[in-house]
Amino acid sequence: MANNPFSIENLAPTWVEATEILKGDLPGHEFHGNQYVDGAGGGGSSSGSSGSGRADYGGSREINGEKVTIGRDADLRSADLRSAHLVDVNLRGANLTNANLRGASLMRANLSTARLNDASLSNADLTNTDMRGANLRGALMDGAQLHDADLRDATLRDADLADAILRGADLTDATLTGANLNGADLRGANLSGVKLDGVRLEETKGDKDTKLPDTHEVRNGFIAGKNSGK
Image (cartoon, rainbow, N blue to C red; front, side):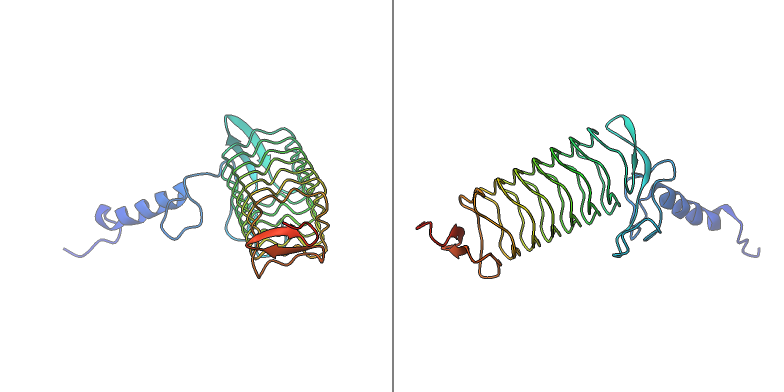
């Protein structure tokens, strides 16, 4: 009997693969765990992206039992986004004032010019996140992962960055007045143009690749003021 291309045996693998694509669990596919709902999600960069090659997985989705809209200029004031999966999203210019992002995954997200003042980002993963010009005044960022994050021109006045990992982060011209960097890891970070006077720097790690203003230096593996005598 001739092979029938439309037989159950031949179609079954195709339907399985199609189902996995809809679920977002196909190996090699960039979506995982059916995390996008109501049209949220798409393939590759979109017109709403920052133009930096980052994806734009915006739209409406349910997080912690509430439906929220993720996207550029979104109003997410006081939103409960604890432990949310927000990898690669475009939240440029979004208002996240007082938002709860504890333990959230924001790797490679675009948060440039976003308002995150008084937001909680404790233990959040902000690896390789674009936060240029963001307002993080008073934000809780203790224990956050900020490896290779772009924080140029960001406002971090009075922010709590205790024990945060900022290895390779770019903080050029950022405002850190009153910030707490006790125990933070700034090895390989760029703090050119940053005023560190008044910044808490107890046990703050640095290395030969850490770029500091003329007022500070790395001494015995830790950042200290040149006239501190520490």
